[in-house]
Length: 146
Image 1 (cartoon, rainbow, N blue to C red):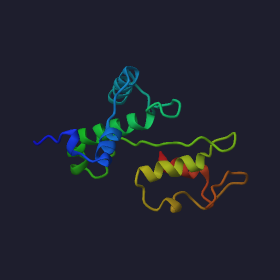
Image 2: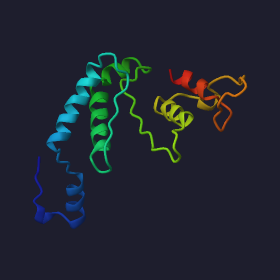
Image 3: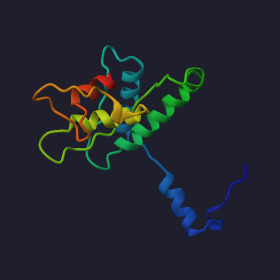
């Protein structure tokens, strides 16, 4: 392995190297450890949420955990293409006061690499049932996710 001294690197290379560095804050290390523990031994909980202010490291943390879990399960995923060891979903803050469950379920189906999402659910709607923009009911999308 050859080591390049900083004097031999261009400014762009140095900047790219600097931007690629991640220094974990002690609290972030603790959160990472706790999150991995919850994932490996969920004790009845199906969902873990990572919440915090912009720039706190939520995306970096979840990207790293996702990569680690995918690497841990690489052999099983090759043997069973339908096996999905982790689904990471970023739910945007609602523009109005209420979240769009239809959007949430569609985002989940996309992350699950579900084919024919627009065809999920039935076309028979009961009166007053909430519908997504394409006519699929939110309960139908929820059932598809389940």
